[in-house]
Image 1: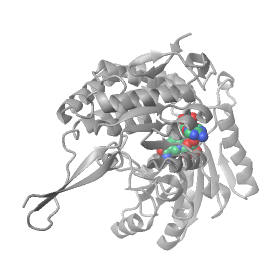
Image 2: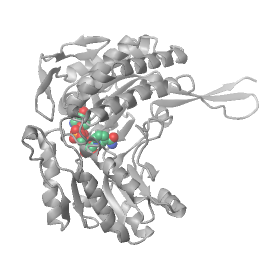
Image 3: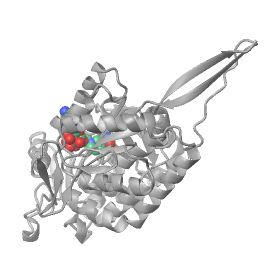
Image 4: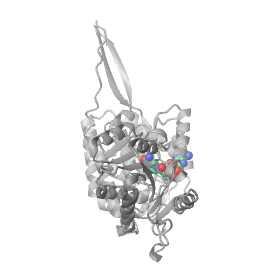
Length: 481
Ligand code: NAD
């Protein structure tokens, strides 16, 4: 059985407790590896290593173009190893191989994208009185703590690590206990590419041990958390005690709003993809369909027909839909079927576990459509995090806006229409961090600022915007007369 150690200060390290935990393929429950169970002591060691690297490895004072070159080498090694990384990710998380392959490419893109901005982090000059010169500098915070969920392990780790370190920070990463393997492989790749020791440290372990220790560590200077609202609140509370800034990427209940004038064939393909990708375990999954009443029946049928055609199977079989990450998470998803029925919704397709004998060891849930969902009901407003779509209808654009904004979340929204006025009004009025018109994303969206309104969190990742969140601004005023 392969052992995955902690990665601290450029070395594989045994967990200080001497304990290891198993990580499994959720399609088969086969044990894939034994992973070091990092605890508070290990986090403390990793934070000290990151601090030393920040103070003295030369990383933050390296010419930015050289930092950029190291990033290009990281991207290139990720691509060289993309087959292995995708197999590892597909087995650890359960996602179909082609989705894992796409995730690996997006991870490479983060390093490539931020390589290009390493030497373009500009300040301002600010006109003041004669005889004075004023300018601003964007400076790194120091040690950034990065807590990653299990749904896009390599992609989300890279999304935070790349912009954090390109501006000179050093990081301690806590991957999710369900999917720790690819983040550890990434650390190894970074070292091969020439990243100095201690700039990236990875401590796998459990949320209430390693995660808690990282979010409350007094020597961490910035925290970036992706995961559930509940844990986000704990992380933010811990950060508040140390007066440390946080970026929170939490859940969503993102709508796809379909007007009758849209290209319905196209829209149906996109709506299905947006809820099926990663078995619906995507923070930005399009989990609500809000459709104009005059095409409700026609469009819902089109969606159901596509859902029922999907191939379901283990990640490496490269089907359309893989398993849910774990038994408890699957039970949580299936509990919502009973909730939907109690609330008067109609389960039009799915609504249970996949019964295929070959899949009974895995946590497979049928693609599911709840129709005639009532406004304000639990299945209309709560994040289910599975391949489950809730359908609501609207009569006019005002009602579409009201329904779209009727959750506490606000991560992403898709709008499908050929009417330019509808498109612009929706773009203005829907409360979400990203609005897509006649599409739902573009690749990994590496270049596009991403983050939430409301309980979907705050701060922005991706694009140039992320650099503002991983730096602090210093103003310098010089009197020269
Ligand atoms: P979670 O919040 O329990 O776990 C996420 C990470 O936080 C894991 O690494 C975990 O070990 C760690 N953690 C757990 N407790 C902690 C604590 N007390 N202190 C510090 N760290 C702790 O999330 P989950 O249940 O594993 O993931 C599912 C949820 O995450 C979904 O509900 C989804 O909404 C959300 N999510 C959001 C995004 C996003 O980008 N917005 C992405 C993925 C998942």
